Length: 130
Image 1 (cartoon, one colour):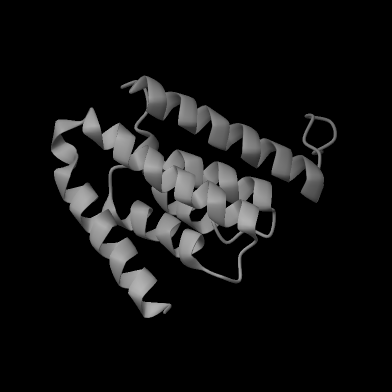
Image 2 (tube, helix red, strand yellow; image 1 turned 30 degrees about the vertical axis):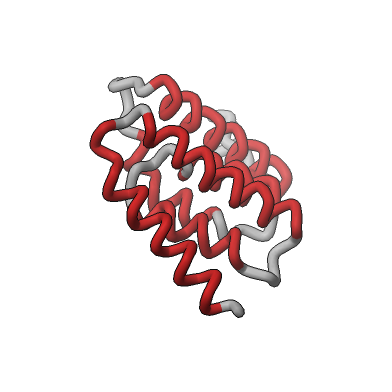
């Protein structure tokens, strides 16, 4: 029946492509600050994607979470950035996402608490790893 209605099983490769496309769409919604869809509803899925084996998806998820103005999202990105077991490109991208959060917050008045949390978290994590 599933073949008759066009449903096919997803290969891991196709599933990854769809996940990357979905993350890019969420980023576009976030950047545009569109009210059509609240991309923050996908925050927990994006945080989970930071643990996905595909580094490209982890980087894309971090770039979307950079625009989520919640301490949980920033904490998740910071964990990726500060984890020395992650590859240098992934850590660099995560640090870039954290920097983007700061730039995004400059133009968002309600964001000061996120910035305070983010700075405290990075300081605490960097001291813990010494």
